[in-house]
Amino acid sequence: MTSWPPAPPEPQDAREVGAVPRDVVVVGAGLAATQTVAALRDRGYAGRVTVLGAEGVAPYDRPPLSKHLLDRTAPTWLTDEIGVDLTAVADEVHLDRPARGVRVTGTDVAVATDDGEVTADALVVATGARAVRPAGWEAALTLHTAADADTLRAVVGAGRRLVVVGAGWIGAEVAGVVAAAGGDVTVVEAATSPLSTALGARVGALTTGWYARAGVRLLTGAQVVEVRPDRVRLADGTVLVADAVLAAVGARPATAWVGTGLPREPDGSLRVDETLAVVGAPRHVRAVGDVALRRSARHGWVPGGHWDGALRAPATLAADLLRVGAPPEDPAPYVFSTQLGHELALFGLPGGEDDVELRGDPADGDGWTALWFRPGTSTCTAVLTVDRPRDVGAARRLFAGAALPRLDRALARDLARGLRDTALV
Image (cartoon, rainbow, N blue to C red; front, side, top):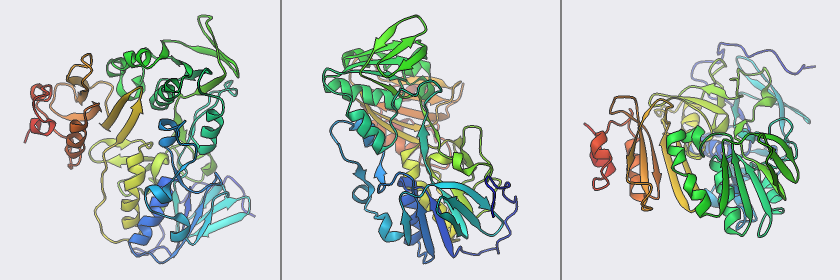
């Protein structure tokens, strides 16, 4: 009888060089998992594919859960969004059979479930992320699954009071949607500005005024000391009465089920190379999507959580796993958000010590773009566009090269010039 958790995986790969797996088990049933199975089939894979999901529903798209919380009451099914029916491309799909552990050897894998082990020659971990709910905040709701959205939707709306803890991507999106529907919304943020984790304090502060204009009360530098179903108490004694409390303080890779079966980072992520092979495990073990901390020649180590990565990275994974010789892609990190009446797109990874240049005036209401540069250099590490659709396409192309783009800073600040025209040869 196998004991769980099992011993760590063997560090070497004992598989025959050039061997293609006879069967693959994909753990997860979201975008990254669906795209992985589709990519395997697109490349001619005729072996057996088994998919293990945990939510009990067909694959759906997650961004609409917050962006369209109140106007899309049913999940946005991936069959409709990307044209892939997981049940048609996989041999077995178990949507309500969560993985409980994994055993890896140099030649195969075994995934433990409540209904016994599932064995295969190769494993793809695509279990996504889970919303963070700090200890003592059990009364707060979270938003990461379709079931979460149903629960939240039932308790918010016109005339109802919602307290959102966290002014990140999800918190801002939900706050704007609920306020627009007539809800009484307060957002509590521990940092000095919204989006400070993603964008830094200076750029995040430029979004502060959006809240009041959208009818949302924003409290920054506020520490939450108690969360109840009907109220939130702050460190300064302020009590915020609520009909619902939403904890929007981030997400972590959903890899607790792996235990010690694979080498995990402190946040639970699985470090992978450019081909999505898990570092420190045999090469027939891959990870993709929110669970992966990917090595990038352009950006260094790229954390998961990027929708575009879940969409595109499976093609690289499948090509390498099947040994078809395609060079690995290196997609730039990309985040898009509709919040508080504004359209945002972020390409690249801003660094905490990077210089920031602004393209346009955030105060004039006509849209603007922020650019991050390595200190004292022309190397651009990230671009954020706000209500600037012309800059979105330019930024996407700038980050499509093998290296980070180099831009003339002075020219980049000039809205009269196209963003791509500021690139240095």
